[in-house]
Image (cartoon, rainbow, N blue to C red; front, side):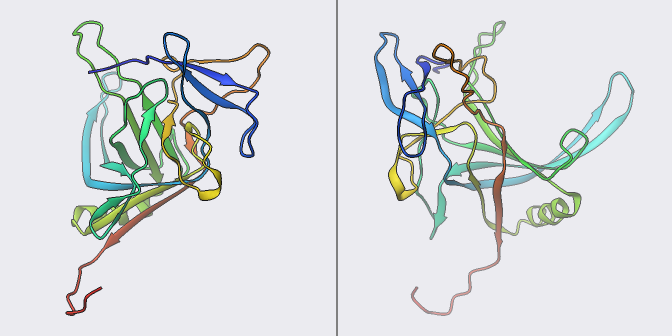
Length: 239
């Protein structure tokens, strides 16, 4: 299993295109540029769920002795949307600084709480590591966490618990940490590179006197969670 990054990430402040005045570039160990200039991607990206399930946890705090219960909705997301049972428009996602493709994103849906007290959506991710003690390798990870108010969460959890979900998607726009080559006006990316929220592994080398702070995964200002439920009724009509 490949882990870590094998490409240097540099910021180019002299990029001059209509949608951005700067870009990120990747370079191999020989100093050769890999691929295209990558600019912040601000268009809509859609992910489709392949599974959704409820997770219930009971936890005891060692210091206080208190036992608490929690519940959440978890699932797996794949880039693209489903049409007639087929996953279409599967934009490839890769970790910045690598050629490794992200095949799926984790989905978590929770109720708002003390730490996250608003209905919001966050993206997170990380580069795979090798454990210092066991030498076991962990894969690259990426996920979407959505916080909902209790009423909305209960309604959604009821649908999931009753196994009435026929299709589910999450659509995001202007995601910090998503980068893609310039695509013109068509609104589709050939591929997307992901800059994780932790800069420990994916350091970006800045030019001298450059004050640009390239966005990383974090809070998404615009998102849409859609759930379909129902049954197909055969009318003997060919669609």
